[in-house]
Length: 327
Image (cartoon, rainbow, N blue to C red; front, side, top):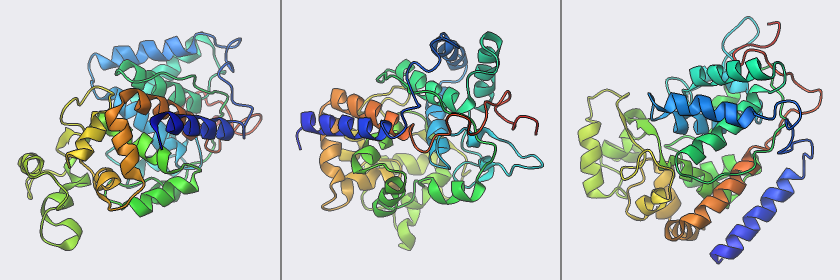
């Protein structure tokens, strides 16, 4: 499929998916909180000055929220008498971050337009702003989500894709959420910035799939570098860049890394190294054209942001993103 056809098909799918919930709208807060995007952007820009990772972390928060019960802000809820937090799930514990910045955004938004903007929408806006501030594409964020009054720890453990899972498993996890193979390759491109802990990929360096040897798809020079960063008896929490070339910039280098066998996660590299996989041609397309990747990323983010949102009178607009109102 040509790049133009790929973009057209993806945009058509995104519009079709968006049409399934007409209550979400890019103009939802135009009369009730018209400055919400600039408020979110100002807080993130301030946070960036002391935390270069924050933009990647905020994008990841939105992703991990949407994959559990839909885009409902449930990942932000902490333990209480009625809530068992998703933050303690294996894909999240000690890993997802940026909650303090979300709290700061919520405070700033509440000061301007109290009781109006949901925490779920704050995550969606923050994801777009974070990508844009890091050099990536912009898109019109569809808004009008409301916040969940429940969390789903077991769903977080089962539904969020893991970095050590195979292409077939991850493809199924995306499909269940209404996301196709193109969305999978596109949204995986979010690994073009940010950091990861050694524990997420160390098995690839020494004992891949119980073989006692490294993953054979790893570039040998890259393998040696990673083994220095993550020795066998080292700390599992040591951080390394997801993209060794431009770790803080949102660009298409992620796909060139895959072509060079420098994908950090098994789930990354399998997009290119799985024999006969339909994902290979998409990786090649995005590697050769950053514009193609950016256009697809924008449409896939819109599509992901429409996974089972609470709208209308469902849910609530939390006054504190960490807690259910009155809880």
